[in-house]
Every structure is written in structure tokens, then in C-alpha cells.
Length: 478
Ligand code: 6PG
Image (cartoon, rainbow, N blue to C red; front, side, top):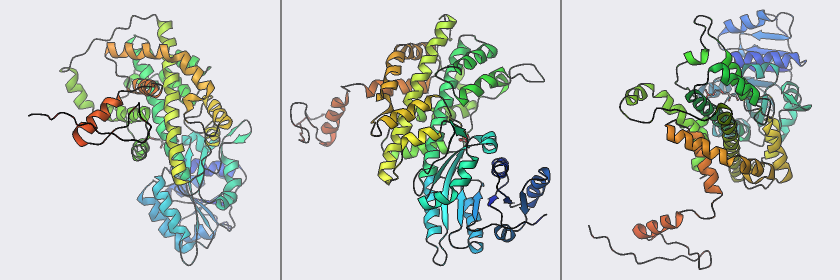
């Protein structure tokens, strides 16, 4: 293999994302050294791209030695133990101030641990960046959204590369310094939770259209049309394209041939765990994760389908009205889902003192990433206008959309419930909306129950806040 030294950038892990990132980095004028644990992918990858300034190495020591200083080494390996293993191998080969970037979907707390580990090496502190990278294969190649977390000085050193390879929207790169430590991977985790919500909401619209007897081609046309309006987004776009795709063998829509069991790799579940730890409601994302779990219980669902009763869905509503109402339900639910994800980010950002700028985060999500959407322009504008915004639903733009959509949203959820069509994310979003906008909730009775069985005390509406009361409730005779 050609040996070339003084390369600008190194990448370890030549799976699809890694390969595409290398091609992207090289295409922006940087020379790249690559290394993979097994040598064959390195050979094949370098051979497949003759004439490019991509240099393969079979020994990690040679790979490290080929890089200019401070070295910039990006890991694109499977999140978890593999990241620690590669870092442990790299440490003896690197010099003080070299930079290690983890571009996988690592758990933010692992990133914090690795950051402390590398910065704390007694003889030669290393610099670490945990960078969320979103956009799939195509994004990696043409321009992903990048969410780097780590010290500001390390961001400065990485900035030219990151800005060169990131997607651009209105000439602005879809990358920004998110914050210290695990902030970047944390924000990527929230991105993925929101991605889960978006995907599930689209699937619920599909379920309603299916029940109304629409063909995949008809649905494809609806999603394609929605992609021209307020719902314009990558996920709506690919949904339209996926629905239109035909199986070469049978001529049937491919989507109809795919088994209805959803997979997941864990970032959605991490979001739920973190939300529970912070007592933040992310009910739409929760519904989306749980919908995947329930879908995966195919054998149980099949058995139950002949034993547990429900209506046979018949949707009599005129097609155009159904499409219009589902559009509004999807838009409103999407706003709620983002409101929840942003609330969790804001809460956690404050707790960790990360200094997260929600306007900047919304801005970099406008391009490159899986949740990219026109709608994010309005989110960025909302937080720019009011960085202390308590909830996205209260921004004037979104308030107006919700007020305009809420009636259709209710009709869609009511229709689904009466027809026995599960719409967990639409209905969880609507329940959040209705709870959030309620000046009164039945929690007074709940407080009575708590005080009854546990003397937990309660505040009164006719007394100043902060004064706690207990009632001598009647005894329960068993
Ligand atoms: C992205 C995606 C990506 C994620 C896949 C799979 O932003 O590019 O979020 O990082 O790995 O979408 O996620 P699941 O397997 O959990 O659906």
C-alpha cells in the first residue's frame, strides 16, 4: 500500500459510514489515512478509489505515524466496548494534544467518561470530541449534520474539517460546537428520539390511510404533496418514495412485502431513560419506542388477533377530508414531539451547565440529518426570538398552528379510537397538549389520595403556596 505521511486526517473503521465520511473529507481537499481492524476492507476501499488522497494502513502504529500534528483521528466503530478498545490501543501511539473524535452513536455518559480518561492521562493528556453524526450513508458522503461536544479549544482545532464536510443550508454549515463533554452525543441522542417520533407519526398516518382503503401509490402521492408544504422533510420525502417502490419479482409495493416488526438500536430507549431521570415528559417519543417494541411481538400479536375483539375498521370519511385532517394531526403531533425533545434538552443542558443554544441546534438540524425539515427554520426562529421559551408550543408561530389544527387532530384520534386503529403517538401528543393547556387537572384528588394513605400533605387553593396541610381522613375498615 502506498505510504504517505503528514496526512491531515485519520479515520478508523471502514464500515459504510466510515467509508463515506472518508470520501467526503478527502473531497474537501484533505489527505486521509485509513485503518480498519481487519485489513481486507482497507485494501478494497483504497483500491476502489484510485487517484484519491486516501492512504490505507494495516498497522495502527503506521497509521498514527502518517498523520500531521496535532493528529486528528476519528473513530467510526460500533458504539460501546469497541470504542474503548480502540482508544486503549491508540493511547500508547499518540502524543499530547492529539485529538480523538468518536463519531459513532455513543451514549453521552460514555463520552464523558472517555473525555475524562483521555484528558487525565498523566504523561500526555489527549483531546477528545464526542461528535454525533447524522445523515446515514448519503449524508456521510455528501454532508451530514455534525454535533460535536468537547472543549472549545478542541472544537477550534477541528472546525475547518467539520465545517468543510458538513451539509450546508443557506450557506451555513450544519455543525456547531454543542458544548463540553458529552453534550454533542447527548444532542444526537435527542435527535434520534425525535427521529423515532417523526417516523412513528408518519406510520400512524399510513395506518389510517390503509384503513381507508388507499393504495400505496395513492399514499405516495399524498406524502409527495405534503412534502411541498409545511410538513416538508426528509422523512416525508423518503416515505413517499418508499411507498411508490415496486418489488421487481412480484410487482407489488415493496412496503407491503416488508414484515411489520420494527428494529431499534437503543438511542430511543436511552432518551426515555434520560427523560425519566429528569422527570421530563417525552410521551410522543415514548409512544414511538413502545410502538416499535409492540410491533416486534409479532407472534403474540398474531395469537391475540383472533382472541381479543375490536371493530373492523371502516373509514367512511371522504378521502380529501381524511387527508386534510391527518395532515393537521401529524403536524400538531410533530410540534408536540419536538416540544418534548427540546424541553428535555433544555432541562438536561441546564443541569449539566452545557450552555446549549437551542436555536443553534435547530439550525444545524435543518440539513444533512435524518430529521431535516423546513419546520426547523421556525424552531430556530422561535428560540432566537426567545431563548428562555418555556415550551415550543407557546412560541407564537406554533401556538397559531396548534390552535388551527387541534380540532382536526381530535377528530383523527377519535376516529382511530372508534375504529380500533392504534395511534399511540398521535394520541399521546394530544393528551400532552390537553394536559399542558389545562388550568385545572385532577391532581387535587391525587394529592388527597396521597395524603389519605401516607399523610404526604397538600397545598390548598385558598391558602398561600408553600403551606402544607393534612386532613384527618376517615379510617378504612377492612
Ligand atoms: C442518523 C440516524 C442513525 C441511526 C439509525 C438507526 O441520525 O443518521 O439516527 O444514527 O443509527 O437511524 O437507528 P435505529 O436502528 O435505532 O432505528
